[in-house]
Structures are given as structure tokens and as C-alpha cells.
Length: 98
Image (cartoon, rainbow, N blue to C red; front, side):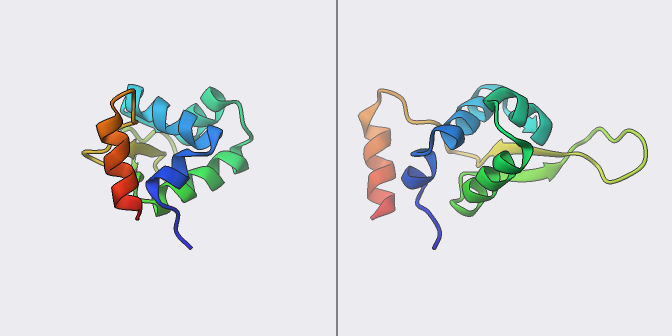
């Protein structure tokens, strides 16, 4: 079962991730792991949930150094932002969730 956006950001770690991406624009898995203070695999699980809820997406980084796959970056879906004290935005999220 896919979570609604409101359910997705109800978790404190996922909310931290979304807020960080809202501020920075993009971040790598390692940057997100360090910023939220959670284990790498925990952050991966939360990123997957946020992606499935349609809040963010991943892309290959423009910078590729050395062998291996390009590093992936995460960003919020265009047009989506973290709800603030503006209750109209919260109402929009709740309406979309029903």
C-alpha cells in the first residue's frame, strides 16, 4: 500500500529528509544520512517510501569521479514543498489524500 504525502511526512526521519531537500535542492544518500543522523539502510528505506508517495525522485549526479556508477542525488518533486504554517497547503495535502 502506497502512503499518501501526509502519511509519508508524518515520520520524523522522512520529514527531516524532506525539509533538508527543500532547503538544499538536492542531496546524495551520504549527505542525507549524515544530516538526519540515521543508518544508511534506514535512510534508504525512508527514501523509497518518499519516492513511492510521489514526494521526491532520484537522478544520477552530474559529477562522476572514478570508476563505478554515478552517484545518485535526491530532490523533491517539482511543485511540492514542505507545509509550513500556511494551513491552505495542509488542506491541499489532506484533500489530495482522501
